[in-house]
Length: 80
Image 1 (cartoon, rainbow, N blue to C red):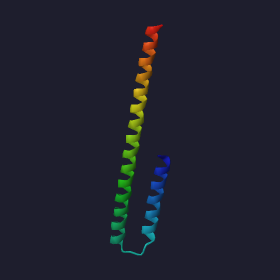
Image 2: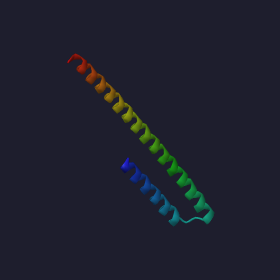
Image 3: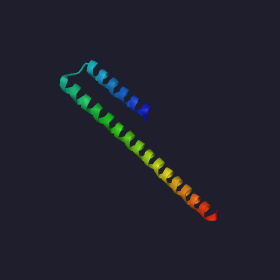
Image 4: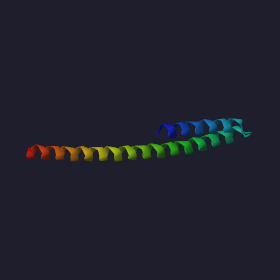
């Protein structure tokens, strides 16, 4: 996740520098910046959603593993 965020921040910075040094009118420049910002924001939202989904999946697995361990522990205690 750290690498993805670094990549996205670099992409945003690169896009901003490219737009600022491109020969275009102020209106075109503002439109280009808005388009790039919207695009990068959408990509960031997608990455956050993927990260949240992955985290939820891991938490669900950990919870189910803990329940299984607890059940085994109770069964072992009853047998003793």
